[in-house]
Length: 441
Image 1 (tube, rainbow, N blue to C red):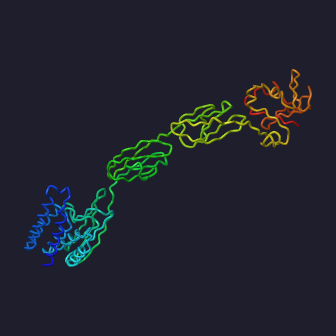
Image 2: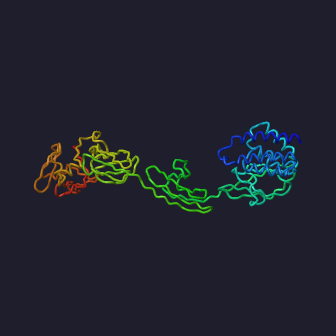
């Protein structure tokens, strides 16, 4: 008995040190009242009036929670032979205690009564859940992970945590001196939110700079309450959406993303060149193309009779990008010389080209007129037929059958005298002719 009293008095000294410098919240005299209740408890304990001592200690602990008071409460319960309650307060006093000598005293006291209590070792996933026994309305007795001292009997362990469904164990029978582990997994209370947006849209919850919760299209399982959803996708803009998540209910959020755009200026020396952006025809140069989606875009400029030019350009939001240095080179490719497309420099014959732009600019009415001025070609017209002599081969009234005229490889000479018609008696519209290749024999 002297040992217990000595321990209790030691706690008085420690408590006195604690309340000597009370926190600001205790400036209304709460700490003084707690100190008084503690002193009254010590005096009652020395008189062996353990029930009165317990009442004073519990009152002191309610006013100012203190591990030393918990230690005295546990010893008082032990003297009253209420071992389960004593064990519970010993566990509370041990929690957070850093003084090894005090921890040793508490652990020794717990070993002394270990065979007089049944212990439930309760763990939950996640930890920190409130623990109830048999009925929730009796109040929580611990927080997981917890060691709970009990009398022998059958118990139902109930755990509850904010944001999780209440979970309980099957009836568990415990005997004095036993230690029974109880592990319970709590199920989150969630609502389902289906996100329908442009594929690849990143979704964040409550924090615009936080981790990506999912990539649309996707479904989120979120705690109940009001949630703020942020959506991001390169090249698009949107506004956050507020949703109210209902427990165990599903809802759908349809998100419309607005493409961030800029404009593009395209200019060439040749007029009316077709401008395509990412494979879509957008206009004819020179032109300003509006509402072009930001990012790296592929631009193609093409014109009949010229080699196409492809460029990549970086479009920035609300800014104008420029491609005003595009130069279209005339096509120097022929196919008549060897019946295969090749560079004019590689052709196995002397070849001249009358290009499409030249045909359009001069508006030649016939093939014969287009051939005027071509190197090595002499034009003769007898008021009925037009003839063309190449390198001096050919004369008037010889039916011009030394001249072969092809259209994309198809022979246009007639099949009796093999005479080509190159003036008004033949083709009189060159508007759809890409070019004329003249191969001198």
